[in-house]
Image (cartoon, rainbow, N blue to C red; front, side):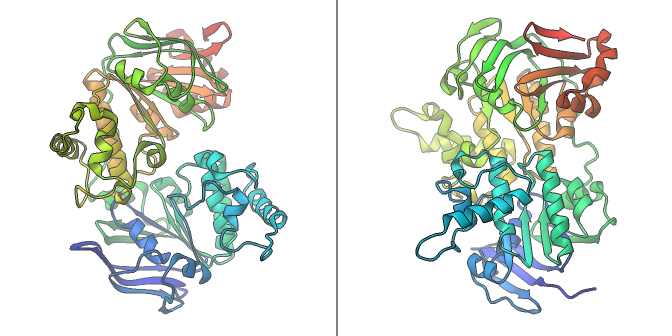
Length: 516
C-alpha cells in the first residue's frame, strides 16, 4: 500500500461547546478515488474545509507527504497542490468565465493578457466538452454551467489532491459522463481524489476506497466491492432503509388544476394537463426540457399565455402573490440562491413569505418563534441553535426549512422542483414521507425531478417533457424507467401497444393531446 499523500490524524473540530468531529482518521493516496459519504450534518463539509485549508482543526493534525501541513488558508493549500471544487460555487458573478478561471493568477502582469486567458479557458472547456463561452459572465449562466466552470477552474490548478464536493449534483447526464472521464484521467496521472456524493451509484462506480461518516465519527471504511449501495445507506443512517419510498395509496379526487394551451415563451409551448386532489404528478425530462420554466410560469415567476383553471374556474396568475391567493406554492430547485437567505436566521427565513400573518404594521417576534418551534418539530429541522445563520445548516436541513417555509401559507397545490438534490438518503426518506402525507391530506402535488428512481417511486402519474412540450404521459404499470427514457429521447413508439388501456399518452401536438 502506498503512503498517503494527505491524511487526517485524530482530528477534532468544535464550535464553542459543540464538537462536530470526534477524532477522525482519514487518508488520501495518489491515483485513488476516495469517497467520503454520510448524511447531511455528518461532518463531511467540515472535513473538506479542514483539508482545503479553510478551517483549522481544534485538535489533531493534517499531514501532507507525512509532515504537518504548513498551509493555513485556501490559497496556501492551493499553492501546496490541494484544490477544492466547492458545492457552494466560489465564483465572482460579475466576472467572465475566463476571469474566474484565472482569478488571483492572471496572465500578463500589469497589462492583463485577456486573449491568452480566453484561449487557456477555451482549451479547458474543450477538454470538458462544454459549449460555455470564455467571455460569458457567471451571473448569466445556469447552475449546471457554473458547476462546469468550477470543475474547469480546479483542473487548471494542476492539483496533487483534488476535493470534489457533490460535483455532479446539478449536472446533466452527458456532463456527468464528461466529469467521470476527467476523474479517470486524473486518477491515471496519480492525483489523489476525494469525492463526496449522495448518489451512491456514483460511489459504487468510482470509488477505490470508501469512508462512511456518521455524527462526526468514522463508522466504516471499505475497499471497492466491499459495500453494496444498501450497505452504504445502512452505515450512513445507522438503520435499515428497506422502503425509502412510501407505498402508493393515494386516491385521486376532483380536478384541482387544469392547463389548456399553456405556454411560457420562448421554451415551453402548448402544455395541457390536469392535476387532481390527492395525487402526486411527476414531471420528468432532461435538464433544459422546460420543466422549471413551466413551474415558474405557473406561479407567476415568468410571463405565460394560455388558460389555467383552479377548481374548474379560469384564473389569471401573473405574480407569486396571485398564485398564493389561488392556494398555490412553488419550492425552487435552487434553495441557496433563490429559496433562502443564507446570512439570515431560521426564523427570518421561515416567515419571510408570510409576514402579514405575524402582525401589521409591527411583526410579532414571539409569534414567529412559535411558528419556528412548530416547523422544527414538524419537519425535523436539526440545528444546534435557533439563531444560527441558515448558511451554516447542512443541505438537508436547509431543504427541510425551505419546505417548512413553503408550507407555512397552507397551499392546496404544491410544486416541488428537485426535492432532494444534494440530500442524503436518510433525509430523502423523510422528504418522500412528507410528500406522501401531503397527497394523503388531499393536497395536489407536482414533483419535478432529474432523479429517475424518485420520479418512479413517488408519482401516481408521470408527464415527460421534451424540447418544451409534453412528450407523453405515463400511468399505472407503464410508469417505468424504460418508458420514461423512450419519451425523453423521442423513441416511444414501442410503447404504443399498451395505449388501448390508456396507460401511455403522447401529447402536445399542434392539434392537442393525441392518444396512441
